[in-house]
Length: 197
Image 1 (cartoon, helix red, strand yellow):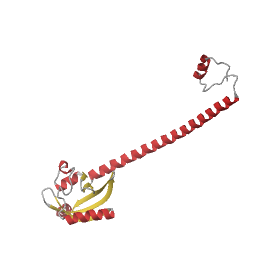
Image 2 (cartoon, helix red, strand yellow):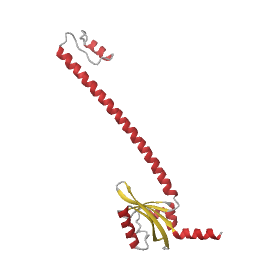
Image 3 (cartoon, rainbow, N blue to C red):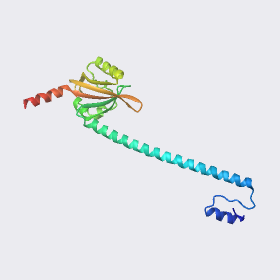
Image 4 (cartoon, one colour):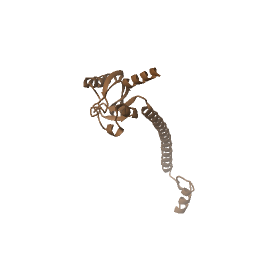
């Protein structure tokens, strides 16, 4: 409280850290109102600090979750690329290839540019269309398939016997299938060459 009422004195007091002032003679209603304002400001400041702390904790949690997701995606990407089986991700909505690994390309005789954006039907992959229909129907019913035997066409038109395993996944909102194909003809050839050594 001050008896100094000049604007210069008020400005000097506020610049030195005062948050409010009241001049003499003072009215008790004014003092009570100003105290109420400062108590409310203190309460709001405390609430803001608490919300800021919660927000900082949430940001930290999200950063940790994003880091864990990046690590997980990197591990999956490496496992996908390096898997010795032919791997593909295909959209269940339109049968379009989303991703394939190099082993898929090598086994079927394609290069990546020939595959991306195409459907398995474009590639004429399935020898028996009834196998294709059963494969997708069973996958959508059960969510996964283990070791189903099928015949597929290579780019050259050769027919290969494969074992397929698949798991239903989502990429964004798109239902997809992660599929691994094991070439039985190649395995048989490798087994024969190992027994001849």
